[in-house]
Figure 1 (cartoon, rainbow, N blue to C red):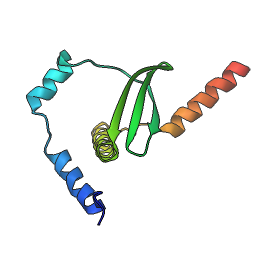
Figure 2: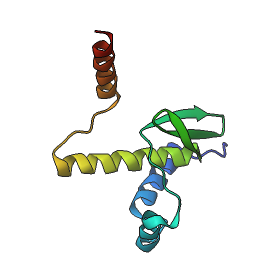
Figure 3: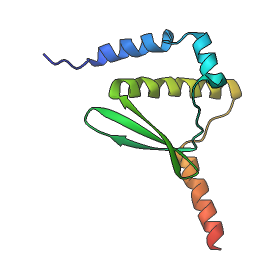
Length: 115
């Protein structure tokens, strides 16, 4: 029998993690008000190893921070971000552009620079 978690185990952990925050609301507020270092990124790069996934945060083509996560935590993060963006889109009545939009804007910009 494998020691790795089953898909069912990951799903139940994901649901539990998303519904029961590890941090208290006060701790999150403190973090957002400057108790921990903050970064702004407008791009990311990913790297992976057999044991983890690393996210390199990039601001204006300059790497500014790296976070390494277990695959389980990365999957939970991905789902949490997806749910947060979906909630924003529903509330705002606006769909956030993805990589397709960024690629299209980049092509248009390059075409304008060449003409």
